[in-house]
Image (cartoon, rainbow, N blue to C red; front, side, top):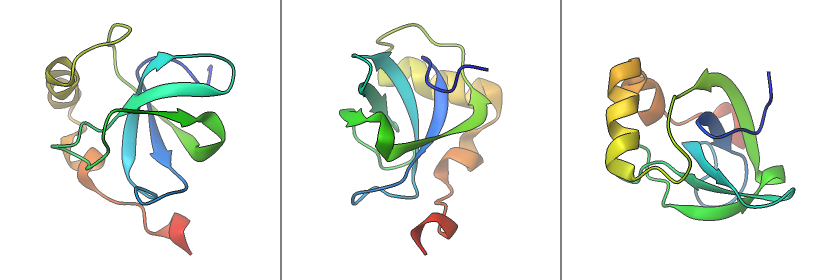
Length: 94
């Protein structure tokens, strides 16, 4: 299982969005990826982050590279992960 891949659900480990779930939308280079929450669901804006600041989970969505937030929201709903994406992981913040 590749940990860093398009569609992988991750948890932000640092910053003001720490503990929130996000999805990898694009791989920029060996150190950075483009992620989104989307903001309407988990509160994470689409942005570039260092891969050291995210923790991959076992969940993965089938999305295309650079997918829009609307497509990602539909994929989340279809996979039944809507409640999982909204939940904030507080155990990482301790």
